[in-house]
Length: 81
Image 1 (cartoon, one colour):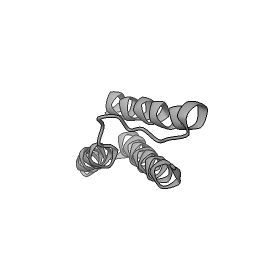
Image 2 (cartoon, one colour):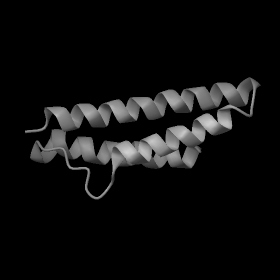
Image 3 (cartoon, helix red, strand yellow):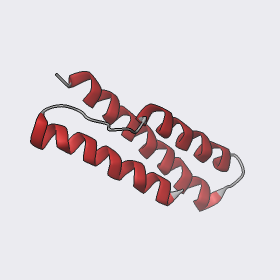
Image 4 (cartoon, helix red, strand yellow):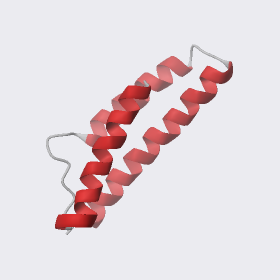
């Protein structure tokens, strides 16, 4: 899950930074951020239902991070020209 979250983090950074630094346009490329991040969140929540303790805490943080990435992508899409 950590690798999947890192992937979506890197792809979000690339799409948003290109908007901010270069073109002024949000370009998600061929990625479907809403679907990809929703699928990641769903997998995280399924795992979360079966663990406790520090694993549960980590998965809770991952879910919040996936939600933040989705929010960043929605924002970038909304503010683009």
